Amino acid sequence: MDIKVEKINDVVLVVLAGELNMDNSNALREVFKKSLKEANKKVLVDFEKLSFIDSSGIATLIEMFQNLGKISGRLCLCNVNKKIIGVFEITKVHKLFGIFASREEALKNI
Image 1 (cartoon, helix red, strand yellow):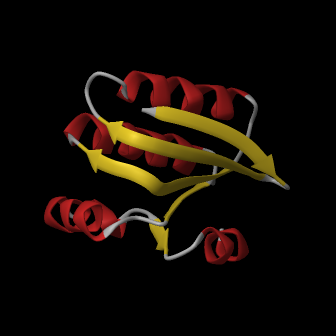
Image 2: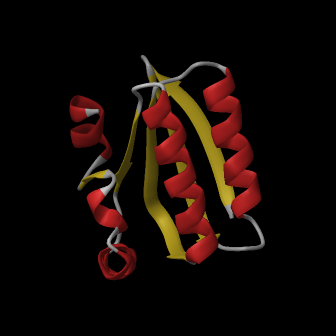
Image 3: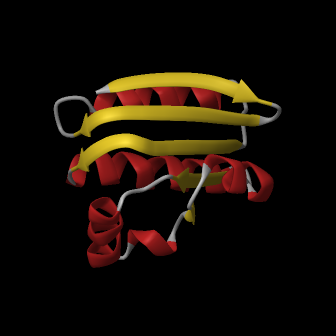
């Protein structure tokens, strides 16, 4: 998995590519920890180039959602493909995150 991080105004944009799984979810967790340490309250994760997520990846997202909630922050996702949306719906986690069709829409609503 490849992770790119940039800041757009007050939003931390995390762009994922490849597969988010048990072997690499810790790398994403470290990105999230750094973001929290820097007191960022808005995080947008772009899934456009992500092809797969497993339970450890979902757990990492839930952990970040919970940590942001403690500081009145928000975690949103964008460009999530149908396969991954299906996994989110089966596990009911789609109710936790703001999920947007495009990065532009997400940045307007985060």
